[in-house]
Amino acid sequence: MKSEAIASPWGGGASPFAMGSKKLGMWLFIVSDSLTFSALLIAYSYSRLNSPNWPRPFPFNPSIIFATVMTVVLLASSLTMVMGVSAASRGNRGAAVKWVLATMLGGLLFIGLHLREWFHLIGEGLRPFSNHWGSPLFGAVFFGVTGLHMTHVAIGVIYLGIISLGFGRGKFSAEDVEVSGLYWHFVDLVWMFVFPMVYIMSISPR
Amino acid sequence: MSDHGYEQSAHPPVTAKTFVWVWIFLVGLTGIEVFLGYIQLEAKLMLTILLGLSVIKAGLIMSWFMHLKYERRSLTFWLVPAVLFCVGMMMAYFFWDSIRLGQFRLR
Image (cartoon, rainbow over all chains, first blue to last red; front, side):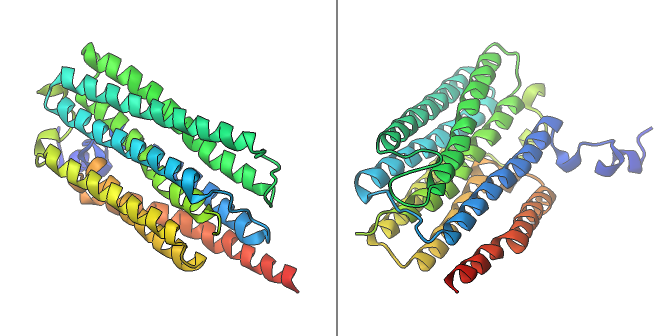
């Protein structure tokens, strides 16, 4: 009973886009999550364009250099993830688990650096609803956008922890590792928009 | 191997070297962004270039790291326009208002 219609992706017989439902589900999640971040970044641009006294509080040295290091750490964790995924697809469980653990370390380092930066800015008087530099919306935008991103990184670290544990014990398949990789790369991708828009566009004028 | 999921074997193997090259490109583009911030171009020009670079970086990450290059083309043609359409709607309906409000204030 394998007629052409049933076997077609739209007939429900085959898997749409020739991929597993977990992977397709993750892609759908990524699409919806990218719209969440788009909305936040558009709201940020809207507020900024609208405020005559939008602050640009980040001196190139040290703020931007610090944020650049954070960016490279996150990018490096994406590279280790991609190595983990390809090790997993080759069936090399041990190597895959090690690469994923390295990715988690990268994520933790990113969170650590980011929190350090947060506490530094809080020390300088930045609050979600006020600051000494200009429009009070700056704090809302800064903590809102980077906070949501940091939450994604933290959830990613937990997610990867579960995946690496399960994959090491043979409970999860290589596809599960690949799906978690998609999530991790997406978090990296979001930062590629947050970094220029929130940091580089806010370098203090010389 | 059965636990490889769907179509794994159909993908052409991507070597570690390719991934490292993509990564070097990503870091290089980040370097250009930081340099632009250092020389401080005029805001509109800088934003345009920065967003252009970000889109290129997003494309690199999606194509190689997220493997979209080796999935069915139809997936890309389904996902990317969906996102662009929704972002376009947000821009078209809400964003221009911010410029209008700015003009009100100036008067």
